[in-house]
Length: 616
Image (cartoon, rainbow, N blue to C red):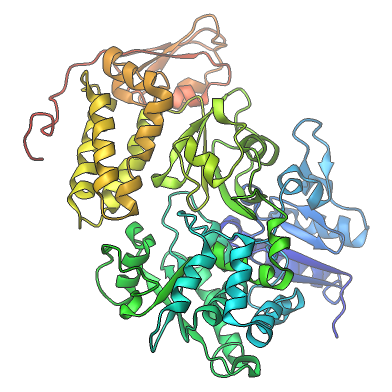
């Protein structure tokens, strides 16, 4: 058996691979061989570590020394200091943001310290292409227990008692969904996994599939036993090539080792699965649209009932769970319902994984117990705003189907019930943080633009209604807003929510409604004063340099693409308004907050054809 004094667990998730992990790994291997350490130190490529902002990252095990922002140039010094001289290399360690002192141990870093890992229990710790390493961390023990010691009713009852709810967005009780399908009588049933993940900024499911594919397969195997399914499909978007490759390897290894196929583990139970590549249509996150897509049809939702538990894929009883839901099945079966319920709240049990992005210092993947205050996630784990001089303004939760939660609600506990009260939704776990330089009208427009483009077009409220709302928001952000537009947006939103066929249309107006609810004054400023306070809507703002605050450093002058800024070094500069294109380059570059945003009344543009009652 091979023994090494150190294992170098290098993140090889999509983020770190893009940041240079392959080149760093090759340089590290070459340097270890050069120093005669190749037989003592082993490099292991793992899946996503989670701390995406600091990639490429590496954990030295068993010391648990954490290195970040690795580069090929630093490899020789790292090997010399850590593995030859025996002293960890502080230059590549995470620095305390306040004291600037190096924090060597991963679990002492605030980003990791406040997390509790259940879904992500194996992230950054195992080779995702190794079945042996997954088994070494209790992999397939739960499947063995479910297949040989438990009846379908026992499995379903455990999941119901645990209170597991779907993590794909709706939060429907998983055990109840499995129970409905188990009671359906048919010659064929299907166990399906939704790995499509269409929300902008979301990468939770992708990371799980890349770092721990067997956890998804094991969850599907247990679910298949519970409902009596013999076939399964993992629906993955084609834009996730690394996740697809690792799932394919995992399925192949399971077949070769009797974990998929016929008579699994000698239990007499048969189950096999395949991967289906989706084309990236957001609407295919809806279960009936996803099933139509697998059938080779256009991904469009159908009315329910009948529900998929009775009539799903190929009109057979089917259960669809998302990646995160399936990844928490095995440890729950292994440890019991009470173990699962030991975290979270009474109605929102367990943990939730979030993709933390936006104007936040620590971008990455986080897992916290349900009920954790939003403030803890943003400040203790996320490290606060990227620019410490900027204030937190809002956080978008639930992706394009969600809503914006303002600073006044930052202490709210993250549960299904509490988040809904704010006008947002839990969604699949996207969490986009925004600072004070964000225009909330433009933000609502951005998300609505996405959902309007992604509408399948089957039902009129969604197809036409979202487009009409988008045109109204475009007019508002371009200076053509009119009195009464806010009320029209609210009325139209309610109509679309109540009449749309599927969840896409039923939730599409959420970003608009939530921003009107909390930031109505910004809509009013856009319409009445023709002013975008954040300086985002170029038609509604102008930029000026404060003579009192300007240091004359010249940074804004060099950043301006129009040469619209003039001035001498160490003297106050000036913006020539006739040349300025409101690109914000000066505003974003200035370190002294000397660029001021002021209203700009511009020549009126024709009101959109929608407002005139014509077709566009």
